[in-house]
Length: 313
Image (cartoon, rainbow, N blue to C red):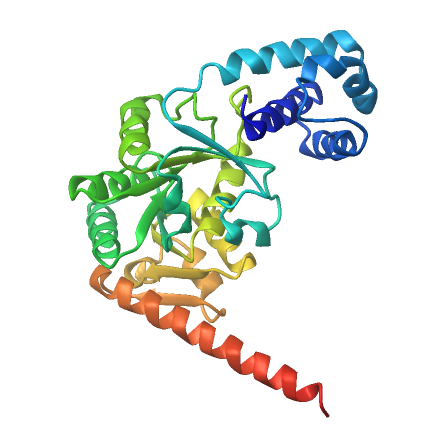
C-alpha cells in the first residue's frame, strides 16, 4: 500500500472514531506520528490509537474496518495527496480549515493551473444561464481552468459549457469521491473525473453533513485565484463563497446586472472592498482577471521594496 494511502486511511479511521471531529482526529494523528510508526498498518496499533482518542479498542477497530471497506470503493485513478506532497496545491495552505488530505480523481496537475471558480444559484434566470455559459467559455479560451461545485443550476452550466468545447474543468465537491450530490449529477461527475478533475477534502467513509458544503466552498475559493458569482440570492452558497474569497484575499467578480437587481442586497455588501470588481460582459473576464493579478503582483513588489528600505533606516 502506498504510504500516502496508508496515512490517509489511518487519519480517516481516527476521524471516524472521533465522530467526525477534525480537531480531535488531527491532534491524535499528530501525536501518533511522534509515538508510532504510522507507516505500519493501523491494525497493529489498535491499543495505542484507542488510548490517543480515549476510546475502547472495539470502537477503533470498527472505525478501521469501515474505512478499509470505504477506501476499497474508490474507482479509477484517484490521487490521495497530503500537505507535504509536491502535488499539493500550495495556495490552499494559506487559508483556515486546511484539510489533511485531498482526494483527486482525474488530472491532478490541473490544481497547479490558474483556476477561476464560476458559481451561482441553483435556480438561475435565463440571463443568468446565458452569463454562466459565456463566462465559462471565455475563461476556458483565456487559458483559465474553470472550477465549480457540481450543484444544480449555474455550477452544472459552468462544467458542461467547458466540457462541450473539449476543455477541462474541476469539480470541487462536498461529498467523498465515492458519492454524488445531487444524485442526478453522477454521470457528470464521472465525465469530469475522466476529462478534468474531481476534488474532495472528504475521505470515502465520511458521512456527508450540510456544513461540508461550506467547507467545499472554502476549498474551492482557496484553489482559485478569482471567484465569479454569476447570480445568486441573498445568503446563497455562492455569496458565502464570495465572503470566503475576500477572507482569503482572492479576487471577486460579479456582474452589473446583479448590482442592478434591487430584489437582492448581497452585491452592495461587497462594493468598495479591495479585490472586488463589477463587470458588464463575460468577454471582459479574462482580461480583467489578468490585469487585476498583475496589479496585485506589482503592489506586492513595491511593498517588499519599501520594507527592505525600512530595514536600513
